[in-house]
Image 1 (spheres, rainbow, N blue to C red):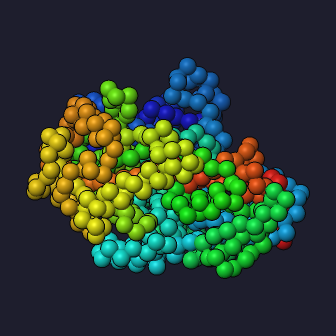
Image 2 (image 1 turned 90 degrees about the vertical axis):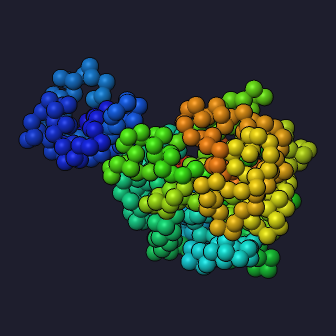
Image 3 (image 1 turned 45 degrees about the horizontal axis):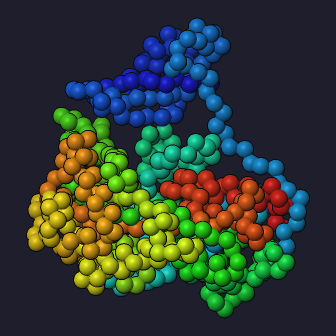
Length: 532
């Protein structure tokens, strides 16, 4: 097949004209075009008065060699790369027990699915509940403040991403990324995620996708257990020999995948006590910033804001401050809401969430500043965890001690004064906010960096510094505060123990986390024969 890049169509043009544009670009007749499929579609709004969809398309032609020769000097025309995923050759070592996977976020689910397809019949253990019971627990927390520490936005089937925008953008370049997207589509995700430049599923559709992935694992001979937390390890001669579930159930095991997620603080403590090597790592801390979605649409699309062919606009901004730190937006949720994401009592944590339609009144984004181990209290492996807890507890107090979140208007934040009333932007945080001064739940250098960044970013996107835009604190779970050390074979120094995904410190976001889960599954398969 031939890959054709840079194919532009105006936003008003009917998609049915895409075929004609493709024929024109290749200089061929309709009879020569046997088949085509869209590989990528992005929006180009850089030119005033015009917005384009830009396509990359793979085509099958009757005379591909001739066309490639004729257009050899055209940089938009090339041979399409092979994208098919190839399963690894399995090893010869015998497994005494089926592989166990702790966690059913993207790393755990995709490790389980790949192992299941290769005949390993994995057992997946999830400390939280299934999607349906989890939705009930989360809704109860958001409405009443009754937190279930084992089943919440962080813990449960699908991981933290289940209550998010379901964004699938990633910075990694790995052929497995496409396999992840294809598996998600097969499980019910929208087909356009395979080719969209900024794919997303939405929390509403993602919940059904997660259940379908679980059902596939079970159909392949695997098993998924909920309310089953790994609370201890048994180690013999430097190798894992078993695990303890919920403090009272012993289970023999010779392979354990640690797909824990970034908030499994008690499990990190247990691993450290059992001799697993952990090290603190950098992450980010800050707030959620909330604007009217209409403002973002106008800032990005100008006169085309609200066009029927354009989705809710997003943004990605960054600024390097005079103090040497950087502020940036992250996990931007068009047409979304700010949600309560605590997993421990007496802590306030925020995150963002959108449904597939992205049709809520406000847009929100994490607005963060990077922190590193030098900022943490001491050099303990879990010092980053304690750093997170400190500011989450301060936010809980500042919010009134009932899981409301502290909030402040952008204009008041810049003027260093408490907010006493809202403007036209209504905060979406369901439990409610308490207006205050966010400097009470953020490090001074984070406040300094954010204050310097806001007016600078307003020059990049007008309206970012809107005085009545709402800042809601605090966001601390941008990524894992620890890394579980593993070798080139993906194992810890305790053999048979395989850290995977975001919680282990090797990924960030749904796709890269799923890819890391696949890599770990491949490492296990290359060492061991399928379980029987």
